[in-house]
Length: 337
Ligand SMILES: [Zn+2]
Image 1: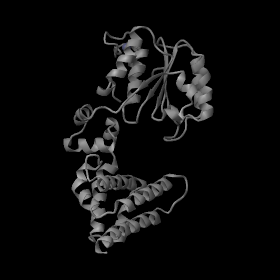
Image 2: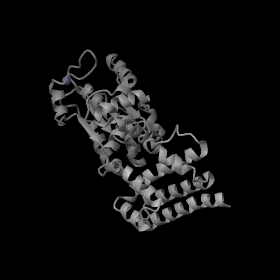
Image 3: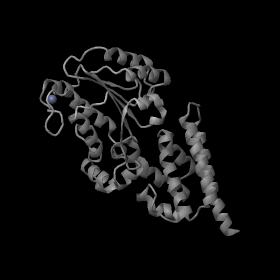
Image 4: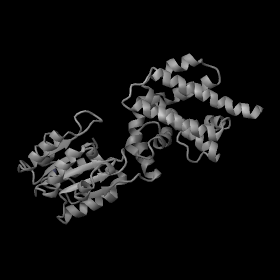
């Protein structure tokens, strides 16, 4: 994990530093903003600073004291990171109860105890309510840092008891400058940031993911099938080698790009900028009205796939492809007619 303030977090850092240097540390912070902006990284840096015995003149942790060494070894007894026990699941009330229990104890090494909860919106209502009492009657030496991509899912009572620090998507120049330093292929920076809606860490995660390796292949196969170069059963078989929602998530970005192109005729806002030429050609073959209906239909199908309902993914994929073919033929027929 990085241990520095990221280039787009300067403003947030200045706010925190001012409260630190003026001895006005809040007992609870809520870090909000889209995923991929480095909120957990920021919280980790803050935690180490709060625990450090001798922060330096710039307000950063010294990296040398006993506390810093324990923190770097991930064995600091006064630091806790609370996350869902299973990824993507809830933070259980039992976890929050343990947290509350630990708040009553005095710090062992540092001046403070620091507890980071991420993502805080993974607490269900009961867990959030249990935490509320601790936020209302803070123990003087405990600082709680909540992290949330979806703060609207947190009770207003919880939000109002925290000092809020908001993170925004950085300007493209700042994001690309940072991303270029992280990855080898500089040509990919622009498209990665588009796919990540501007969130630099998300862009980096996409770069390292299986889907980024295969998206070009899926797109090429899709075009090849439309041009009759590969058969229907072949594309179905090829795409079924992957989790279907992964393919469909990308496929939906192609569709929304096509819709942009069909409606506005401009490629200024498309996501898949590396596929621009093919998408432009394809958009000319599509009826915008029918396409927008099809995009909605596809989104519904993708959501169905993500829901708990058990779905036959092969049938779902075949249905989407057959309807896509019909869509292409519909426009061609209107030309003929
Ligand atoms: Zn230190």
